[in-house]
Each structure stands twice: as structure tokens, then as C-alpha cells.
Image 1 (cartoon, helix red, strand yellow):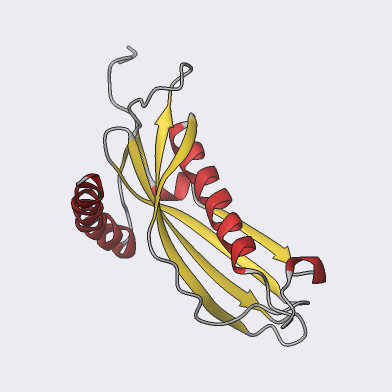
Image 2 (cartoon, rainbow, N blue to C red):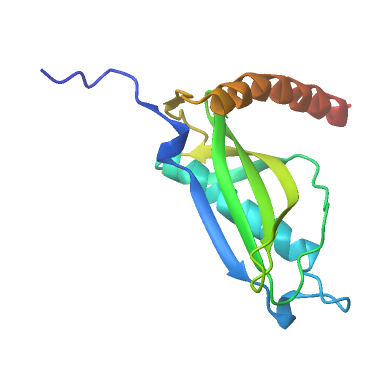
Length: 164
């Protein structure tokens, strides 16, 4: 017997997304480091892919939390991004994106940034719509799930201040 009205629940691993790209000279500033705007583009792109994989819907970026560039990513290095869903709300999803660089000749990896983004799922008419729930499994996923609620509350309070 099929339960067509039962809610869909997915785990973060179902939508985890990774991306690797070689940093080329046309991606860099005059110091030979990847442009910050290029990193932001890649973060937004992988975050959107993760949210879309979870919801199986079109998504739009609603928020990007602060982004700190801890270390440069140099021309010739790899830039590695990993995105994981942390929590779902009614129509929105929070995604964490972690960025690392990898020196090709040594294999040394360094974390260069982390960002939290919020995406909203859209129906075929472009209106926000419900997304499947998430069930964290690992200890880290459970910690991220709990802290996502605090970040959401902060974002909502900040949004109210912007409306004044």
C-alpha cells in the first residue's frame, strides 16, 4: 500500500555536492590569487545545486552569510568546494559551503573559507513552495541542524532591521 500523503524526508548525504576547479590566470587578480568574486560565484553555484538536489525544484538565493577569505588560492592550485544541507524550513533551505585550496605538487590542503547560504524553492509559477524535510544522521550533521535554527533567527531579526 502506497502512502502518497506521507512527507518526504531526506538525509544531508543525498544532496551533498562537491566541485573541483583548476585556478587559471584568467580567474586571478594581479597578485596571482583567485578573484574573490569568482569564489563567491562558485559558492553560490554549488549551494544552489545542493538545494536543488534536495528539493528537486528550482531555487533562488535568499541570503549569503558573511564570507571571510582566510587564505589565498593561487593560480595553478585546485579550488575544492563541498556543500551540505544543514536544515530545511517551510520553503527555505540552509546550505554550508566549505572551500579549500590544494597545491597540486604537494597535495597540501588549506581551508580558505566557509559560508552559509539560504535558498528558497520555487514552484512552476515562480512562487515559494514547500521543501522536503531533512534528517541529520552524523554528530556533525546534528550539530549543524541545531545551529541552523539560531542562524535563521538572527537572519530574520536582521531582515526586520533592514525594513525599518
